[in-house]
Length: 472
Image (cartoon, rainbow, N blue to C red; front, side):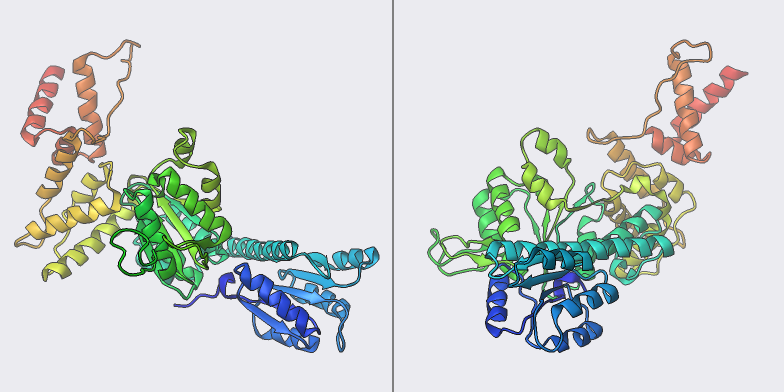
């Protein structure tokens, strides 16, 4: 699948002076803007715009054949989303005002200062990307559909919240700006990052790196590589992950665990689009797109001064939060069916049926490991399954009970409530309400209710008998 994005769209330079075109190309290319088309003949511009999409136009005003003053209103009318930068030797205020009224994005006077030129073109590209994102979001809201559902095919979901998240990512995937993906462990952050890469249409590779546990030296070597002799044992040069992701996407997982020194180096890469391999004093340009993921609260980490605020705001130009599995129980039936099929294929078996009470049991579990935990649970149950048409629910109960008994477990609890008379409930009343709540959540299934309570079914039966005897 190839999806066109702004990262592959060129900036078109139109000027009848070849020396100006050459200078412009060199200035922009040295700043990382390498997709460029140069036209000396202004008559070629409108046919070019008609046949292909471009990111921005830098237009000289005074040219033979068709002047920029004639082309500007036509471009603005026919391609209103396309930023047009006017660049000319004329220093007349009236000319500049007239161009801005016609819809020019900016007005530059030759000879233009290099930093001003680059800054202007980059702002035009940002505006173009923003207009496309807004347009894509409007289309998705109006049609309530995805333009590229195949990009999200590996993510099994029927959740409306997930669908809204996909629609947002379709709108921002082509911007080239970083995306910060937040979500609990096992919620599918890397799958989402891969979907963004597919949507971006970038020609380079998707390169994932888990930065948790990397000290500063290992982080630098992993990302930037090293030159021969850079340190003891560096017998030959090695390129880093940044070089491998050239023209593609670098995915940094667990970014919240990055050391302070490494945060500075990542910030420099984002700001300057340059990096230095270890042992080298020659900077290399980078044309990759960075995606990051974390299960940590980065705002809390900033408050603790463990994460740089300037890096956070660079990384979170676009941000998505994946809802945990417990907040989208509608996904449980499709995920269970998918993982049973997957497990059956891996074990060379016919896929068994899920027991009728399984979904009720799973819907009442808190899923600290999210989709990854569900997959592991089903693979284990499928491995234990020997015969019969219906899979046993026993292994699921054992796993859930063990998790609820663990110190890090977070079983659902029923808060103590006052009695009808406004008094604090007695232990007998609290136990009765706890059991009633478990049975309600289990849909009346005593086996599932016993699992939720962390006791055996016979123990639950004894308590129910005592409750009935006490009422009689």
